[in-house]
Length: 162
Image (tube, rainbow, N blue to C red; front, side, top):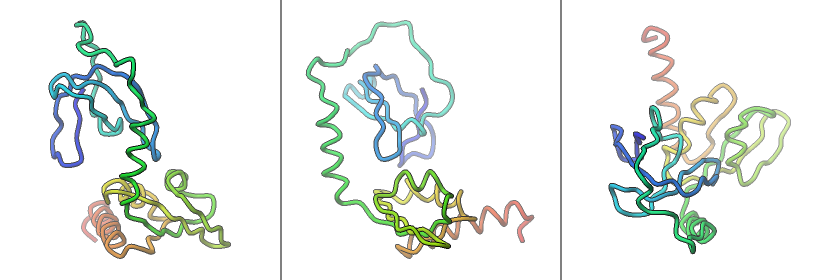
């Protein structure tokens, strides 16, 4: 499959012996052995682009009998402690994709306030921007500014520059 990493501007061909699929923090991951890198790797499935091809060759690296997906996720939990936190106002009953990521929701009459941990802005900006009619970023200010820029640019392109 072709894959676009967080730091890549173009897709890169990957050949992977698949071991497991994993749902973590609202995202699906493919865990397996990358034949080109020669190591165990994880790929967020929403960054896989184009068609996935099944090769006729044998699996080069079968999943080890002692492979422990739980310890992998436990390491993520330790890393996740350094995440950023967004506070977002969201119209009640709206923004299901954002609600799935929330670790705390304060229910209000006009707005619900969500607390959403995230590691990189790129993980959350698109979700917020796609819900711009029902979501407002309260903090951090830098996230608010990035979402605002994306929404204004998108509206400008679709409204003939106005």
